[in-house]
Length: 368
Image (cartoon, rainbow, N blue to C red):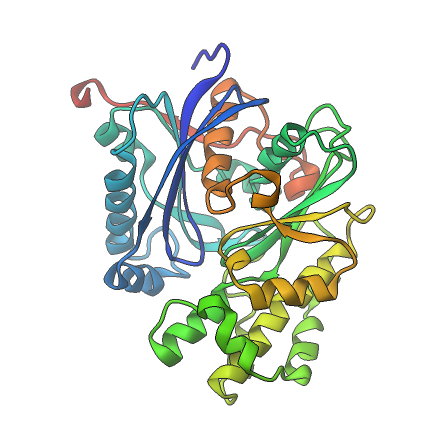
């Protein structure tokens, strides 16, 4: 695609927390953010969430037809409500992620979505990065770099996304481009909401520990947390990434605990994994700006703030929408793919060279 100047791009994200689909318009040329557009959200039903949970860990060739149908129907029903869209960034739903082995698997056919919507769709963002030796995640850091420049940050700043899995981006905003040496360091921190949400669903049939209330009433099992922090992942140098189920041992360890104590222990594990992550940053950030559903959990936010030595604030304090940052990121990345600009680099995923990942699918003539 030939893109001259900013365009209206629509991004969509369905994360590992399996709560639903975020969609957001961003006006950008893939380098500078011009403005933030309208947003919307579609929650997965209990039935849809159950279908997606059943498909977790499956790879191409496995039976994922039901999950694909849920993802494609959910995205179409949400995205079709937007107008004047010039390009779509469609992440799909991650079912399995093993960059050192089988690769990465996001279900959802961007070509089929392009035909239904009548707009060009950029999708399959992670495969090229993995094929070149990268982790394939996280992918939002290039957008975080643009946000730091939009915020006119002068000192290093960090963005922390608390979705199903936590991920941290450390940014030096004085660099000219996100792919420049020293501009970015990004990696997954550990579990954020996924294990806690799973425990709440299994134990109480609810989607989450609303407001962190149950965790706040429980007692942390320090021995379980200590064993969790001894996991080899925390001693690996970044960039590095996680599968949703990497810390299955932690989920099993809390099974004998009461509901409240299990919630408190899982929340503490998520918070302390963030503190461990900061040890890898080139220098302490001036602040940690928090996005994702976990920022709505005051118990988790308080535990993080108590574990680190820098201010921890939701991104709303900087004038941003923390529920829509990742959807906006895929709108931004879609424009970069269309322009042939990099979407990941050694500092974000460990890929051998800066790479522009993603496939562009245009609507077939018969669908227009």
